[in-house]
Length: 563
Image: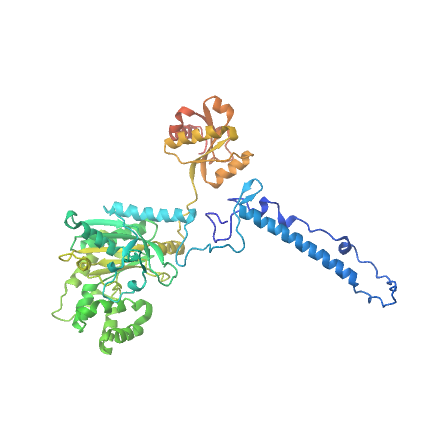
């Protein structure tokens, strides 16, 4: 049974827990029964006596029928003994008991599939520590930027996502009809849920809203590195701000997160474009307002399928002529805001161009201008985007989009808002950022840690050990209570090392009678004498044991003892 640190299922760490086979004896060290006939040195062949019935003897060097039968019986007996031993071992594994040590064993063909559903993940404790570390960084940035956290049910009505724009997301939903006849789905994204919640309270909310969340989302799509069907996504949104300052603030939050986890602008860039500018360009080329959203869905595939396939799909699925399709692809190849603006022609709304230029200016003022890159091919696939759009990318080109977002002023109008409500935000998946940290070699080392392990001297002292653990926990310390006293002290220390304990608390009769317990510092080196590694602490100050140990450590430092 794999421990939290297993690299792959089906392996286990011998340092972390007993091996099943070793608990029942080293199976490989057992010598098979020796057949004296087979093990005896070969003697010189003797002339066999003639059979009594007058038949001819077996040729020299060949075994008689009787010998062959005897060998076959011995082999069958060995096989039966081995099968019996294997069956017994398997039965003991299934029971989870091997001698005095509890273990977990699994039959060769378990009755259920032990792997998670395709595209989903199990979070063993080691993975969960990494996930919590990541979520803490998400939440920390949200808090530092003055945002509030919110959440919602993972189950939503399908109607929330069925926007008439040919989006892939409507084909990727985990959807079904519930027992009340309502068409529902596991949410594929969080933004429509946010819109529903904002409209649900309408005018009772004071704008602008600055909200963030870390929801679980589901999309039935092809799994690949950094992309799962089930994932968690950090969302930050600003509702009620019309100006470009909102997008700049969101980009600043993304940059702050990257910096906090050790990623630099040399590792990651943020591609920026404007759907408003693209709309003006497309309109000048004869693309209607009704065509705009589905055309953007096709254009969003540019990086995946290339220029020729993009032109072909624009012609085949959107009905554009070859010349217009080529011009649109040329737009996606523009290298600067000015190049894109030149395609707008005279008399076209240029407010989007001015917004983009202002965004780059403010990013420089904010101090993250080196993270931004203009890229006309970024249009984002969701139909509700209306203005600036952006996407995080791996400069090494190894990973898919790291994050993405933009302005979506018209989304709430689809759900019943009387007028457009200015809004912008981004989504940041958890899977791909972990892959990024792996590639950069900066994945954090997050071993299991605990402040104290409390161990009873014997079973008779277990109640006192429980009281000790309770008193220490009152002071806010993390305490792992050893549930079954070990027979050997070395086993107790081994356990403390495995769980990453800083201190060992021994609850023994002599100290307990004196109203104390003995605490040993497990992090002091071997060069420190044992008597300087431990201290007896009175029971009535255990709730303040951290203060006691800090003072003790200070005293040792003053005595030139390395802590």
